[in-house]
Length: 369
Image 1 (cartoon, rainbow, N blue to C red):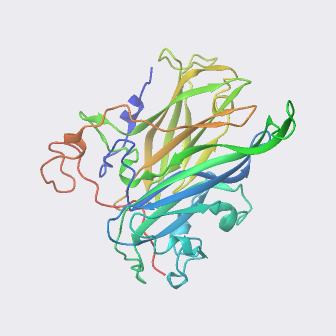
Image 2 (cartoon, rainbow, N blue to C red):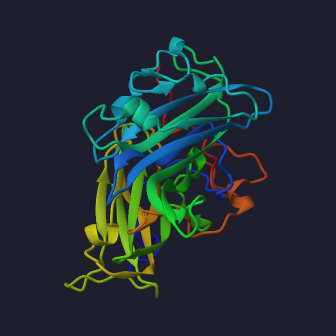
């Protein structure tokens, strides 16, 4: 039986380690939003995403630049060749799309970006209008021609929602009801670059090379969607496994007596979402909501001499009647350890004494003009 990341024994040579942290550590200068949408879904759902970006710096104003990664198992690496497909706040920085809200966000300030896919990226390549975002935050007006900048920290939260119709009492006519259009939605927080799953983060301190998604179930009432983002550098392809487990911790078994495992090859910076994942990948038409799913690194390949490998995942539990979604955030199987993740003594990159080495490189950078 393969359970909770044991499949990572197949991993290749270790790399620099991403430092896992608890969910409330969301501030960073590089943030991944693993899912966003401007698209029709099942039934009557029409999914949209709004972004809430907060400058957490005490004194400096910040600018923000955003990269859209359309969904699908194809490479999005070319989007880091230049800034022509990016969304930024200043025309002088040569971004392909401009929204002034992303420039000069004051200390402690928050901007709300409504439906950026619909406003700037919808149908740009004829594919489904959903995917992921990579977001950079840096001191206002410090982006140089060669791509250097003064990095600063921000927090990104998103709301993914769909309109719905419901009835409420008519305030004018007693005993009658009127139809009202509202929304159902969920919050999906941005993932800091230091909180990605990493294939090299495996030691006696813990195994942070896989993530667990809980609360999975599938029946006539509910559906479960699962998404994965290859958050590695633009030259790195990853292979991951998706494996569901029953409420008693046992794997699901197919008709041949084998454990059900789906293997996925993900090109650089690709994002994929499996709708009705238990049915579409495993043929499990009716399962209780005590199912959990492990998403684990198997291997990676890269054209980068010094690759940086990472991924993140998410789940969504959706009511089939109302399209009301519940976000399922990924979890590591090991508790947060202050001494392990943030050792008190200084360490050089690559050192393993006293805990994991500190990661000092972003998987991606802002390209020059």
